[in-house]
Image (cartoon, rainbow, N blue to C red; front, side):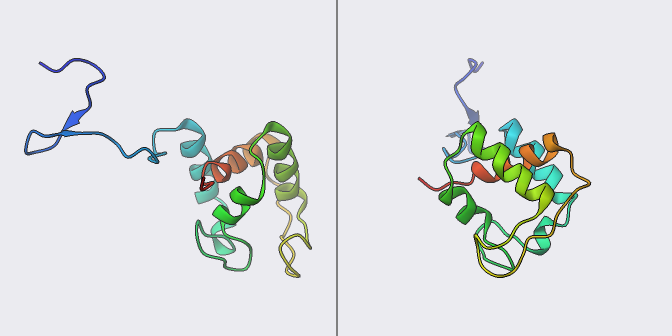
Length: 114
């Protein structure tokens, strides 16, 4: 019988642990990913690749992850913006609630590379 907290075992019976950078069980990651998946964000942004807008990782690496930044970037998602990442403007998303936009930003900020 395995004790709690000792990890899982694979088919060969060897202990396995999730990678340190596995975010899949983080509630902010899960909620933000779900919201982004229902939006049009992925037509302009990818995790590691610049499309029309910066990659999510570029955004995460540019900004400090704190409440002020989350609120600032959430407002930018809702109102749109231009100039920080180039000439192509980010379209506004006025249909998003502030809470949903903040949750999306929290997801993005989790992608920061240390």
